[in-house]
Length: 419
Image 1 (cartoon, rainbow, N blue to C red):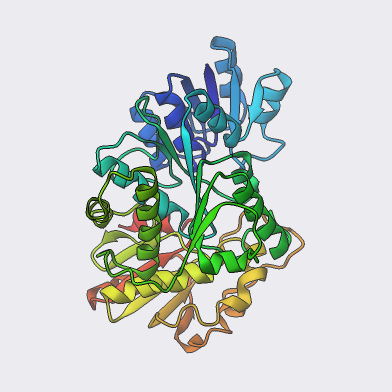
Image 2 (tube, rainbow, N blue to C red):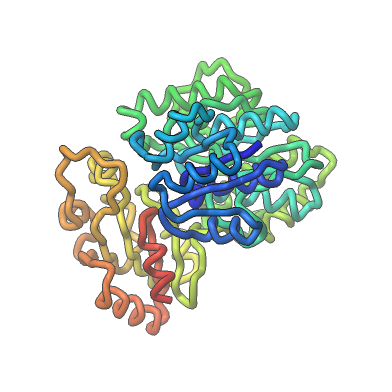
């Protein structure tokens, strides 16, 4: 089957392209700019065009008829490529439909990792443990990995491990054998107009899963005292000192990974499992060390910010946060939740919000408006991605301060270019 991926460099589509390639399909794609994922796929011989004006897909379809057009949520309805595919009668879908077919065709048991926070780390850690323990696995993770591609299909595998995102209700297209919910908070107001809708989506996800593992605090968040689904809920205050990993939230993710492995591989000892978890090298943009005293993190929600600052404090007594908020529409939901989340930062450099999928009728909230309610507002400075900010970062690093660059927008790319 010939599959054309529009938005092939994204963290959702890129791993799926890797999986389709492994499964024996012909993969072709496009994106607006290069990324680590496009470079990785290009090394495997995938032809990728860095343009989406419709010319490449037309030429491709004439030379090699396309069977399936898969596009990312970032592709607008008036995209020339999407319009061409529909006009030609090519099967079109977002990523979930193709992935569900590959899982079904190969009789794989789906382990789906969901939740507002912790999905990427938990999924990456689980994939790492499969590999470290010598167990074949197929998987898709929404980031780059130091120990392999972001997505893979192994014909010897029994399980498919999937970072199952709730955005655009993606996770409701699957029926997992085992679901894992890492952590919950209301998010994605552009998909779920209120917290009630968000909770109901997760309850539906659990009802579609054969069994679910989650924390007691998240069961309470779901008002799930009478949930008619099969699940295990764990006390989030339990002792997790068995793990040597840094960061309280990382150790909580590690416990969920341990429970998954104990459940599906009862012959493995706890010692084997914990040792594999403790050797986890981390994943891209999840407190990723870029250089001495400089780390990058994808966090853009107050809960994530607070958790990552707690992790940073385990490593340094002086932490500096460079923060780029993500989506103006989301800031209207979060602005009052920032109050206490940055207490562990000695200094904060607050950037303008990265704009994506916005409501044009909403005025863009300024850094001053967003940071004014911080309990440590006197430590917050407004900043731009420019030479002045880079000089401040360099000054802090020279003083042996830990600098944490955080955001889901283009701040990560900017900092890597500076390095």
